[in-house]
Image 1: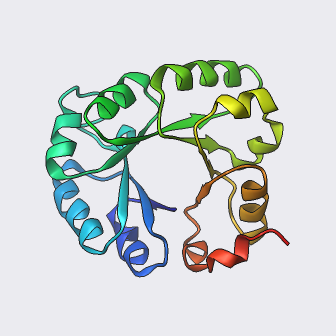
Image 2 (image 1 turned 30 degrees about the vertical axis):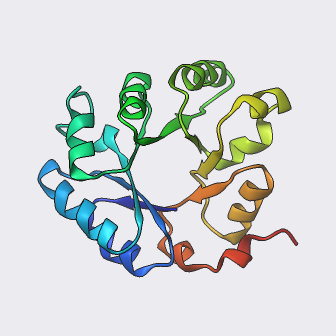
Length: 181
């Protein structure tokens, strides 16, 4: 998955082999054209709604995004994820684990929001997950500190089903690059 910050990186994503773009920091006035360009390129948009001014806290934002044809969103907010899920969107909850005290709160939030995916940050956190925690998590997208093929391989071997990176060079690596050796 390509982590795309703003529209200036959109051409690189559209030209890459990456099929999914987690797009952040998009201005509201650019959203419709961005959504159309990604869909027309045969790629899948996951919008980080928390980073889009005018949408993040607005209850009507989900209806607006559905009307634009945005199929999926990423958020840290339980209420936003629940509204999106009820509207038929695919949801991914972004979870930042900064220390041992944030993990139990993150698990509780994931239990409440029931997202389709969890974006776990930073990726090296995967090695710290207990089997009991892993068993209750939705599929994991590893993100943060996925900078090269070795990082990607470690995350996939640690249980991630996908990777998210802003390292554009990684958007074109062949899928076999990350296979187990």
